[in-house]
Image (tube, rainbow, N blue to C red; front, side, top):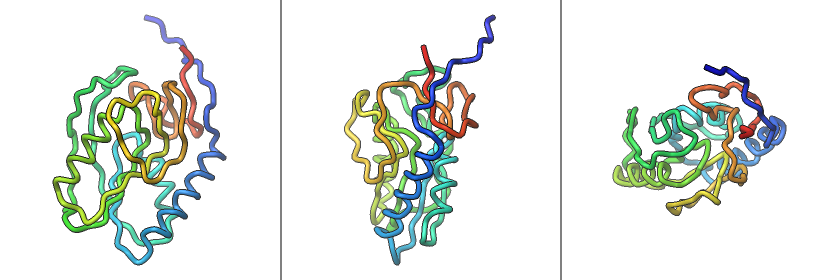
Length: 176
């Protein structure tokens, strides 16, 4: 068994991420001024982004998390989505903002948004740190977007490969 260290290239630096988080927080704070916002983080990948985003928001928020699975140990989505950890909050009649680390094929994100719409929120929007539109199979509308990225498998800043490399402060891509 070979345990080579993966070769990583920085795609988005920690400074660029910080600037994007500040920009997104400013937009969200302005758009939801005077409202009680519920943020729903998609675990596990979005937790770092969501933690940084919450600290920059200038409005009171509540948080919840949902955990979905479609990757397993592969670099490509299986296309089958499962709710591994459901919401604990009631969202009917509430303003809801989903916080996602990456929108790739759109399958998982579309599944989640449909799942949440059935619970009848007052409003439902999506904030994604990264978007990979070249791989889209299902259309997804992103209301707040950090970065559009090329078709590379990214890790770091919460994003993983087989539960590894989430700790990296930059967003990197794995060289194949």
